[in-house]
Picture 1 (tube, protein in one colour):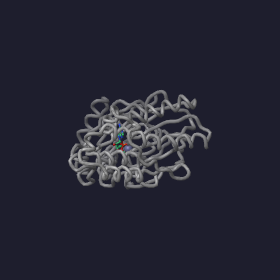
Picture 2: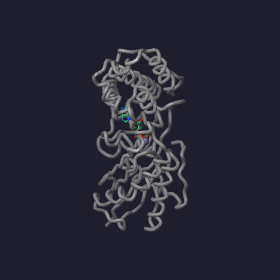
Picture 3: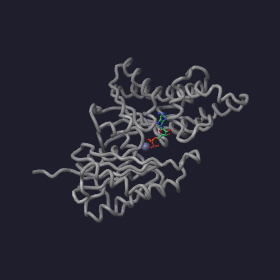
Picture 4: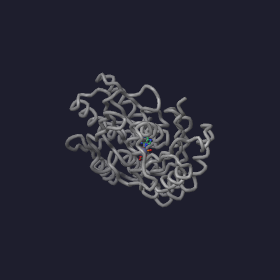
Length: 333
Ligand code: KG4
Ligand code: ZN
């Protein structure tokens, strides 16, 4: 009888500490501990994130194993995010994973965070068929990815400055919202008029993106307004900003599908939790005859289930790391 493949996966690239267990390709648990500490600073403070990971990692792993009903001694491998991300945060996850793998004498798997966002689509059916184009949009990245197989991906275009999630968060901060502003802006936008205000729609050559001009255009617009303007027009401002970001995101995706003659399309990453983005993506897909794939909410923002599914494929390919591998703050797909 073939042994089960039981993998414990750990994600600690930014400000969420997460652990998941996957058995033969099926997720059995996915625990995420958010770090509230950053709210009062209006953004992630790297040193505080590392410390919070240190506090959270043992209980999070413990609960993930218990919920899955898997004993440490029955694990086949340990997987961990190897980058990109905040170096201090990555170090906590990788040190923990390396130590545990060494102690249990089992392989360690290093998972690329952005590839994992794409592979979140393979956690549950319906799974995309290859090749497909995935627009991965998070707090640190905005990438159009041509996905040829689970381990063969090519970046077609990406942001030349701010990521879309960063634009959401920074503009939300200008509007007085707390961190992370993306989800709050999304909520407020639901009762606002998306055409109330017009902001810059930065456009860059090829399939790249740019969001810093939009942020600046909102900043200068707000500077010219009288006191109390933001409070009075908050919902319309949020709806107009969201409308612009989604329009810019969709424009390049549309170009990519035409250029590469591909109609299988997916969105991924934290910003794919945005209600307007999900709606517009689905609607455009219907109009253009695309097959569209949107991850479940819990698999959009950072989570260890996406690390676990990636690790499952890497385990099958025997794609293991040395026990002394080092994480990388920046690394390409
Ligand atoms: O993928 P993710 O959890 O972490 C990174 O890898 O960066 O993405 C986090 C980003 C943040 O910028 C957050 O504001 C944004 O995703 N985000 C949203 C929404 N939910 C999360 N942005 C807009 N609307 C949302 N509903
Ligand atoms: Zn992420």
